[in-house]
Length: 353
Image (cartoon, rainbow, N blue to C red):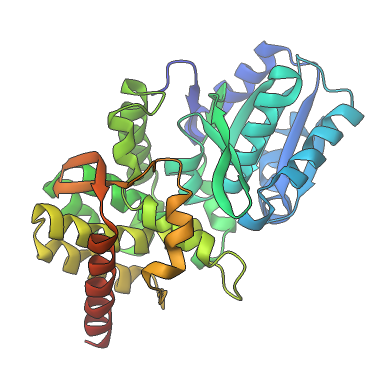
């Protein structure tokens, strides 16, 4: 796990509050969105009554609000309450809250401490852990941001009980991604799990540990950490494409679809067995109810080219085999169009069965 981040799980709650007390922060600020404020902040304060004396900052829910305008609200509130360099910001919520909260904290007065308290499955196994932070800009996901590790992360599965099913399911895609990167044995175990199995502490901690080990070996995303982008090139493009639609895709939903399309590209470029693509589609149909997104290359073209990984060529992380991922693979427009077309046809066929 990241060397300068302390990890605490629900059984470590006493240690977590002792950790905060030992830091002797001058002021404690809680950042939550309107959902996590209503459902998770009360749970957190019951666990840690000391936090009743903290300052609360509430921002609007949703990826569409992960922008510079909302970031200014956070900075303004910190200034209004005279937050100094010895203050701390606790980010209570899903991936959007940890992304924007970490960005706001790492830039306020050139950086104050922040703690991530993920309340969604996706934030627990992915967004809260790894040091990446950022905001969206001009419809481009995470266009502005940097690297700064939280001083601590506190995980507690109690928060998952406050979430609607759709939000809970969203995080499963990241666990599936870790399994594809790990091994065939782990992938088969994951594909056999029922929905409720993904919310257990053991499954979550294994996924956290998998990502943490990769981050530890490549903290600045210069090599093997880029394998964690599997499913995210097309996934991020789909998320941006649908951001202002009547039903935006949640990040995990976009990644689930992105995995399917990028596994098809892996099949076309590296002969990844097509059975793997079939299994992942079957998994999607079983776990993600009614998840679909009809699109062509032209719908996501501008979002793909705005991806920070791309320069002159579209580049992706793709599987040669399960457990063996190559990063910075150049994919031509024609290859991408072909893969999208073949995947759309396959999805249509399998969804009817």
